[in-house]
Length: 452
Image 1 (tube, rainbow, N blue to C red):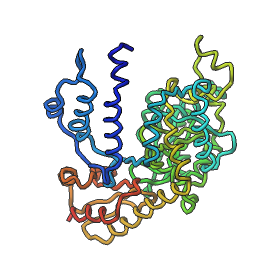
Image 2 (cartoon, rainbow, N blue to C red; image 1 turned 180 degrees about the vertical axis):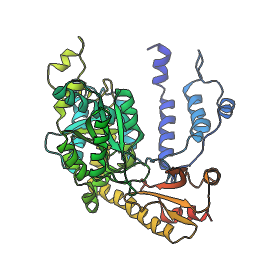
Image 3 (cartoon, rainbow, N blue to C red; image 1 turned 60 degrees about the vertical axis):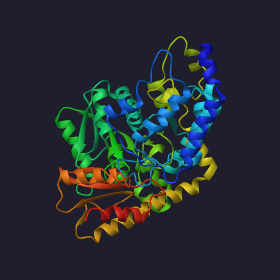
Image 4 (cartoon, rainbow, N blue to C red; image 1 turned 120 degrees about the vertical axis):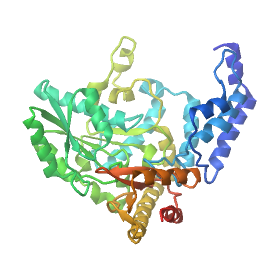
């Protein structure tokens, strides 16, 4: 570190300015929705920020505050209802600052024991809620795509240990997340999509048909992926039926719960998750519906030792860590260097208690059902499916894709809400993805009113 960089890091005025900005941003109620700007606009207003001499921290912060931040949509705005939003708690956001300031290496127990211990308490809590036995555990990775990949590579290795190398196939729902197909592409295996039927929930019979289809193509299935909360509709597969199929066909049963598995925390919803307790692995993204900052995916294995056999990296400088048989997070996924991204969730759970999480998730589900009922009363609107969790998909009767695009653009420009078009089976629609406890029913009704 050069003397000038050291001095910049020790600039108390800059530190105070950054603390002030963070505090003011967190105190906003609501935060500004904001909207994207074109590259030419940003080039004009931000100018050249990277130079040999540097522009100084105060100037860089000013550019971020006045130009760059307003050109990003705030996913924690209560009316950000597109994709799957994020709504981190204040405690989680504050502790994310602590994690960054603490410079903890989260890849090994030797270097990050205290932080890894706290992360593991969260993973063990999630495993218990899912019904997995004592000893289940894993790691927090960057996101659901990496979590699915890491788990399914373990599944493939387990299958190859039994049967040798084969022309492998993964079985999943036709409404599974796009990451499953990406995983297949990266792994060089075929993904066979089973028909999720009109309800959007994959059944055991459909999975059996897909397994037979794979075999007819000369492929050997090694994993069955169930979804607990599809991204587009928030629908849960028939997990108990899928667990039966996986057991009968000696398949690894992986549950992608990136968005919707958090619903298992709600007592009234637990029957929907019957079969989850039989999973060999599952993922859930705290940055979606567990009120944590980006980027965090909890990856949990029934038998973590199987993951350790697949993912432990070896090198002369690493063997000092490997020989201790400690719980090294880098042993359970495709990662070596990692931040302790599970700590903000740990701090938030420890601060507010699990009951507050159960209540917040339930409030989102109740709101989704309430606005779904309102949609059903309006002759110009039509529910595509009744909401099961907190995603509400509906159509504006008579609109085509261009109508949805124009409406969505005007809604964002008004700075009231961000609701993008979607589609199902080639037909355009739109959706409310409700994961923010501060989203209000009256605002959702006001959004519907703009569709008259």
